[in-house]
Amino acid sequence: MEYVIGLDLGTGSIKGIALDKAGEVVLKHSESYPLYNNRDGHSEQEPEDWYNASVKVLEKITNDLGGDGLRAISISGQMHSLVLLDNENKPIRRSILWNDTRTTKQCEYIMNNFGEKVIEITGNKSLEGFTLPKVLWVKENESGNWEKTKKFCLPKDYLVFKYTGNICTDISDAAGTQMLNIKEGKWSEEIANLLDLDLNKYPKIYNSTECVGELNEELREKLNAKGSIKIFPAGSDNPCSALGSGIINKNRDLLSIGTSGVYLKYEEEYKNYGGKLHMFNNVL
Image (cartoon, rainbow, N blue to C red; front, side, top):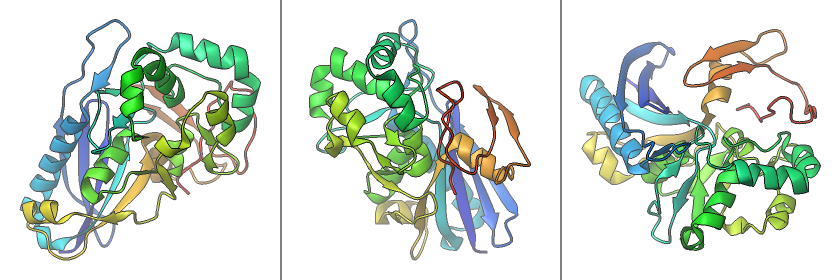
């Protein structure tokens, strides 16, 4: 049987589903990993824990269905969380998660000095959950780690890298960093210049449905998989949930209650809500 696997890298666990050629779910499996709250307001995870858990999910599914039937893997994941990679493409520190609140000072600095410009470019005011203030926090409080950083990426992007060697992201996850020019669909040079950030540290942006590589030989052997297995970056979790729920026009909305609660609505074109509502690119 030929099938594809969809992975979702959440805050508490990674979930995997296998779908056949008719789009029917034929198998599910999940694996959990630790969350580190060592100080008030801090919320972190080890990127390698995500990877190890993802391999367990893939092994379970391919053992049950046969690795030779796997054709592609698509990955969604938690938004905003920051992963820093060094010159050897290894994590420099634990990932600072979306629900980490240590960055109030950095958010206030951004809004007090560049608030209107940042909202105009990104569609969002600066909040503790976004990636941009996390980058500034590392730059100010762990300057050595920032200097060692070759690239930053988002959680599901770390899995894409481990599977393919390609350090990249997709348009929906990029929109959740508060570093993207949301109207142009590319990294904002203006924000990078305002905050003295190096664009060379940013990952390349792909569309959510673009193939960004193939599963490496080591993992194919571990899964007893044969032939080419394409890898797709899919998107961040909320935009993927919206697509899966049919939120592709203005006639349907989605209320999602998970580790966080969100209400998702489709817009046909960019609107500036002055930061009162979040605005992100969807996976289409």
